[in-house]
Length: 175
Picture 1 (tube, one colour):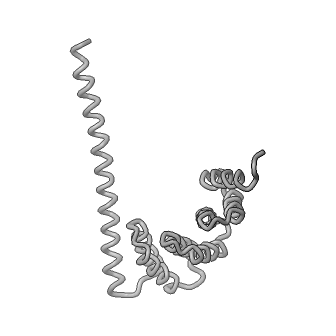
Picture 2 (picture 1 turned 60 degrees about the vertical axis):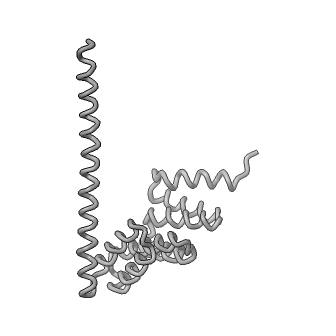
Picture 3 (picture 1 turned 45 degrees about the vertical axis):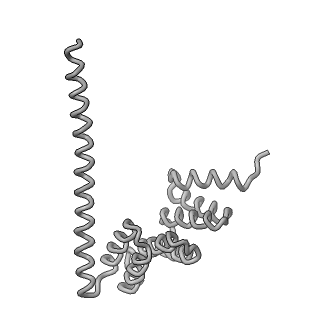
């Protein structure tokens, strides 16, 4: 049995190393894909006017890179690029709201989230984001209302459920 112990340790070490290598490799592939999209979109949009989808994609990459001011400019261009019938408009308004939220421009964020919800009343992510911005502004009742709207569309939404429960406890004093 003592002879097998080093072999077992070696096997476990190789398995752990293989798993870590796979995760690193996957992350490198993801980063290459994002950087490739970033490069392609930036060069295309410097040369010609893009579509709402292209501005949205580039703005989303900028959000991931925490370049919030630049992402806001791109989302605004996305809104100007297409008409009211574009199916991604709610996504653009929500992302624009997130860009404003990240810069602590809460009133502008609220306006964008509400516009997103006007276009897509069942857009759960926008309801969650609206609840979050209301929480930041210490508007507990409005935040709870937003999370409850999210739960109407998606009753098993963990974020809305957890946040709504927490807010209910604050609104109704125990005792």
